Image (tube, rainbow, N blue to C red):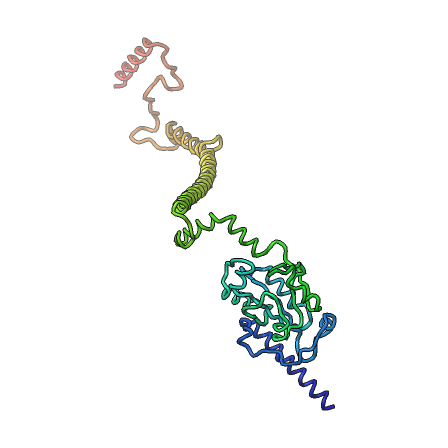
Length: 354
């Protein structure tokens, strides 16, 4: 009973430490193997892949090792490490990175130096521990020192250092677990892109302030690149001017359309007002008719009232009309001679009255 309780306490303690380490890994860079005290203290018992996949030992996680150069660290590297981390339910991923001297000797020159490559691996979320200056070929002493259970790598034979496959002895020992390569992305592919578009990158870095010496560019190429940069600037300016011209033309068209629309509205309003004023039934015709009636009324003679009294005359005598030929009894003269005869008769009558 006491033994079971003690074993359960040890299991809980181990699980707590593992969870704590995983949280630290996600919030801080992975530690270096030679600077950490996070070593496997439990006995390193031999495990098979089947046992590891069914369940890890109680007192420790399965320690998986993956190595490489990891130059220009990219998504293909990260996916391979993710596969190595998730091979078993509970695993601890150690990543070995080869030094510059070893890499230049067996593979060739790198873009990133060893310090940059170490730091790139430390900041990958799947990595629990980084081993610097890792060996090119894994020895039993190295595997024992770091308590490595399994080695993860793609299954393609890796010929190097005079061997057809540097992982052959690992495979024979039953410690090799294959991962899948990510097609379409590799360090060689990235370098090929840079070499293919070298002129573009050289011109860009010259424009950003790098010197021709830093870029290892000859004097003639430097002048050529700078001239091309000036040509590109002119093209960009012309393009900007064209775009601004198009914007200006579009604005002018929009304003012209608005002005034409407003002019049409004002024209319709003016024509409507004109027709309302001067049309067949317009206000001007009615006003003209009213004024014409008033003028006719003003020019027509007024009849005097019949009941009005007459001053200074006898009521028995009626006044003689001023123009006798205009009276109802006398007709107007038909000729000038008759008119003169009538005037003489009028004068004679007046003399008789006197």
